[in-house]
Amino acid sequence: VSGNLPVCYGSSTTLTASGASSYSWSPSTGLNTTTGATISSHPTTLNPITYIVTGTNTCGGFTATATVIPGTPAFTYTVANALCSGGTGSITFNSTGGNTPYTYKVTNIQTNAVTTSTSNVISGLATTYQYRMQVIDVLGCTSPTSATILSYPSTLAFSVSKTNISCIGGNNGSLTYS
Image (cartoon, rainbow, N blue to C red; front, side):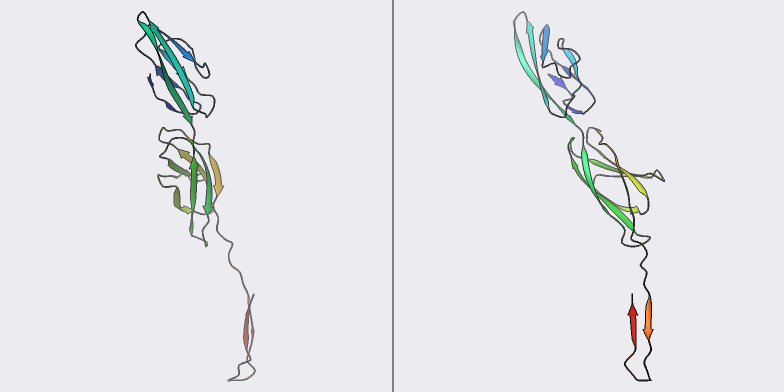
């Protein structure tokens, strides 16, 4: 049995058996047909599916299996905002599912600038922008997207009050910050 067995969830793959004159495939879950040398599997769950093909001809028969492994990457993320105005932030991805290795994609929604990386940390991102994030696995399967806004802390504001010394050389003056 041959075919592209890891497959993106929601897409299909073709499985082909050879060496017999008739073929029967089971279970029927996700199959376009249960007979014939070539069938199409369209997985409807994220769980692996093992198909059994039984081939028969005038000399007897055989049984073979093929396991289709559907996958879609998923991720969570953390944001490190800029420490001050004008600084940059970063997004750290934690990915699961799909087929490794992953590519990480961050798109600035306002400017359409795209940053991709094989590292799960994308840094140097300008603050006050909204970013769309996505993970792409080695098969090209894509995760659902998520969006976040990077920010920086508000401007630090303070006031100073002073109390002058009472005479030259004195030490009774003070500064108070609030």
